[in-house]
Length: 331
Ligand SMILES: [Zn+2]
Ligand SMILES: [Zn+2]
Image 1 (cartoon, helix red, strand yellow):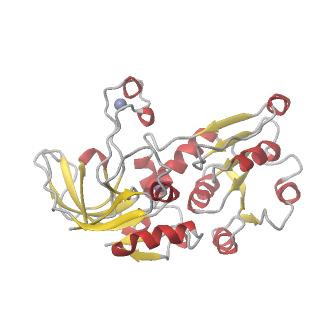
Image 2 (cartoon, rainbow, N blue to C red):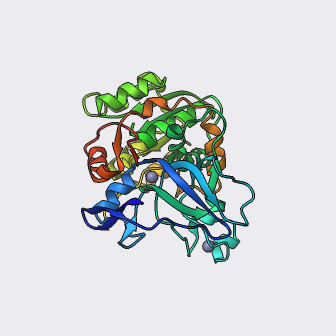
Image 3 (cartoon, rainbow, N blue to C red):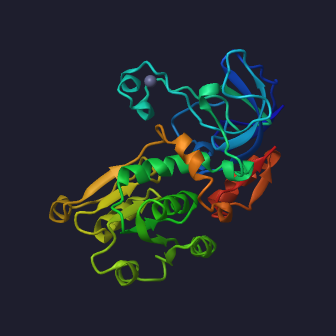
């Protein structure tokens, strides 16, 4: 079988690998589609310290079960599934505290940019009827956004500002709109992303050419939104969020920041506004609910740009250039 294997900075190779055979508790999945995300850009650039080369990348994928191990009971051949990346150990300090996203011994199977994968059955979620394998590829990022929306505890009837209208921003906005927010505004400089945001029913603002604070006040009220999500992970946006959010509001960090950068925030401002700043990390216990949300949310507008597996590197470069929203790679 063919896989996209990361060998180091800017070195992604298409290689032939042996077909996997499942252990007793494993499942072999014939991959249908694998989404590309910002993390893949960081991996390709060598700025993601979580794993070493060589490694088959891709952590947002769907496919069809083609083989199951002897001990697997909840899946069978032919099932359409989404696969959760990363297995927590269940034994370390954090796992035993039910904080699986902080697991000290996380295990990552070879990823979904491959014709086939072989994973623990604990990570495989059957897609509900009516959810396509393309839309299913959004389950993983949606699960991360669901963690963020859970944490933000939106007061029913609130207004929400989402900074960044990439896939994470629009998934977060969609969940917020279904989780208590009355108005959701997406701030995004790229016109094609703003138009998708509009199509999905959100207010939009261009932070490059418009007065962001002015538009937010005009559309979401003079006191600002109760919750601001930073879906980019840029220090400047965190600083903006602290200014734009309503007094006693919540700023929720969702995007992955460059580890080398820092934000400048006045502790007095936090005190005076009695603000809460939270950050969400990965997707503890949210994947199954994210899969359920796929039956309700209209996420089709996020899709449309696709590459063949043999062009995985071009696909990652396209995302870096801001093309499309959720780019899919298909074997
Ligand atoms: Zn991702
Ligand atoms: Zn653990």
